[in-house]
Structures are given as structure tokens and as C-alpha cells.
Length: 291
Ligand SMILES: Cc1cc2nc3c(=O)[nH]c(=O)nc-3n(C[C@H](O)[C@H](O)[C@H](O)COP(=O)(O)OP(=O)(O)OC[C@H]3O[C@@H](n4cnc5c(N)ncnc54)[C@H](O)[C@@H]3O)c2cc1C
Image (cartoon, rainbow, N blue to C red; front, side, top):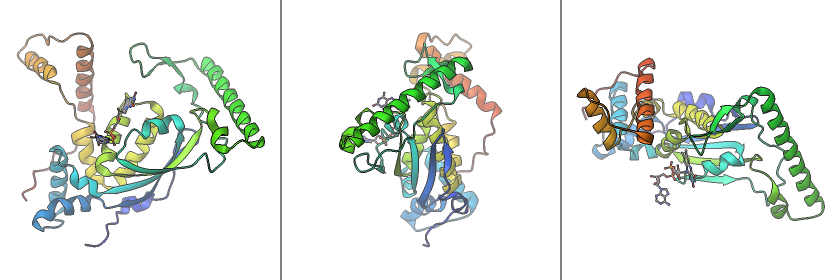
């Protein structure tokens, strides 16, 4: 079987997608695509690619039933540049291989993340991990000025330590989380979907969502049918807990749902997602594969 090349992936390969104020995601290379998923799923009985309709049906069938190992046969390599605060979250996705710039070997560049004014917000009152209301632009400007000033001071102190001859590995100690770092990051499509499901979600921090969205574009270019299936069966799907299923059953029987507090809030956010899906287009559900 010839090596798989995908026209849509070839069109974006090596092109940095800008992220935040100074970062980017660049698809360096990829191995496989939709064809590879189909070939590997069918290997057990020796049949290769069939019609587009059958292949699409098979890919949807695999993801709907969480038969994920064929998706591991597709691998993407990214070069990305992000603030350390984003890298700290990113690296929690352990099923990947990475190689990061070394602050022991290289002098770190004077590049810091500065949020856009519309993203400067107060601490959320109901989500301990998140942002609440955005600050008025004049107040956001004061916050940003203070951030930039602190970054300048931190970098000047770093340079002063280097000039004193202090080792780079020590001199960097007081550099902040807003400093940009970069790495090569390689992941298979199944685990990239796990990353995207968590990091494209509204609960993820805005700054990592930007990178997740850029990588989603790359995944879509490499394996368009698999990405469509991911949107259909994972990203756009809603999972109900046992209590939520009982609440739905009560609602369908014309009774009160019986939920309260945080459980009710979560249920309502799922209902809102379901209601929002009426407005968005959903692809025709493909037929089950015959093979
Ligand atoms: C909104 C949000 C907030 C978060 N907050 C925090 C936080 O405050 N602190 C924090 O530390 N993390 C936090 N995380 C990270 C989170 O706890 C998980 O570590 C991360 O999301 C794992 O994602 P993954 O399943 O894609 O990753 P992977 O680590 O790539 O795992 C992929 C699969 O392999 C399995 N796996 C990988 N490594 C192991 C292992 N060593 N042993 C057993 N199974 C393994 C996983 O169970 C999973 O099924 C947060 C994540 C999100 C999305």
C-alpha cells in the first residue's frame, strides 16, 4: 500500500497558524489519513478501501462505538510556540512525544504573552478555575501596562544575571509563566481527539483553546472524515449521568426533573447544548458499514 498523502493536508503543511499575540501552530508532518484508518480497521479480513460512502460509514461506526485503535494509526507532528502557562496545561496530555527548547542551552528570547484587552477579566465567582466578566477597556489597559512593566523588569533581571556570568539554567529561574516557549509535539489522532475534546471546550482556558482550535484545523485537513465523525459523536455529543437520565425520563413522563443545586446547573448546561445543536448543521448520519 502506497504512503498516504492527503491533498488538504499538503496545502497547509509547514504554514504557521498564528495563535495569541506571538505564538503559532505549524503542522510539520503527518502519517496517514482517513484511508489509513479504513485500511487498518479492515486489515483483519484483508479488504482495503471501498467506496467513499462505505469508508465514511466505517469511520463513523468506529468512533460512535469507541473502536479507537485505528485512529492511532494516524500521527501528526506539530511545531508550536506558546506561553509557558499554556505549555503547563498542554503537557498534561501525556500520550504524546515532545521536544522543547532548552533554557539551559539557549538564552530565552524577550517574548512574553500580553493578553488582548477584551480577554482581561475578573476572577469568576462560580468557577474557581475560570474568568468572569471582562473588565472595562480602560481598566484592562491599566492591567496590561502593569503586566508589560513586570515582564520588562523580569527580562532585565535575567539579562543582568547572564551578564554576571550566572549559568543560564539558574538565571532563568525568575522568568514568568507568560514567557514564550516552543516545542515539537507528536500525537496520534485518537489522543489528539481527547486533547481537542477537553481543550476546545468552553471550560478550558481561552489561551489553550486558541491552540486547540488551530490544531483542530490541522486534524480536519489530515483526516476530514474522521474529524467529521469526531464532531458528530464526541464534540457535538452530550453524555448524561445516571441521575440525568432519570431526570429526562421524569420530564418525558410530564413530571418535575427532581434535580437541584450543582447537578441541576450541569443538567441545564447540557440541555442548553442540546438546544443550541438545533441551530447548527449536522451531517447526514451515514449507514452502518456492511462489511
Ligand atoms: C479544564 C481542565 C482542568 C484541568 N485542571 C487540572 C489541574 O488543576 N491539575 C492537573 O494536574 N491537571 C488538570 N487537568 C488535566 C487533567 O487532569 C488530565 O490530566 C488531562 O486532561 C488528561 O487528558 P488526556 O486524557 O487527553 O490525556 P493523556 O494524559 O494523554 O491520556 C490519554 C489516555 O491515556 C491514559 N493515561 C495516560 N497516562 C497514564 C498513566 N500514567 N497512567 C494511567 N493512564 C494513563 C489516560 O487515562 C487517558 O485515557 C485539567 C484538564 C482540563 C481539561
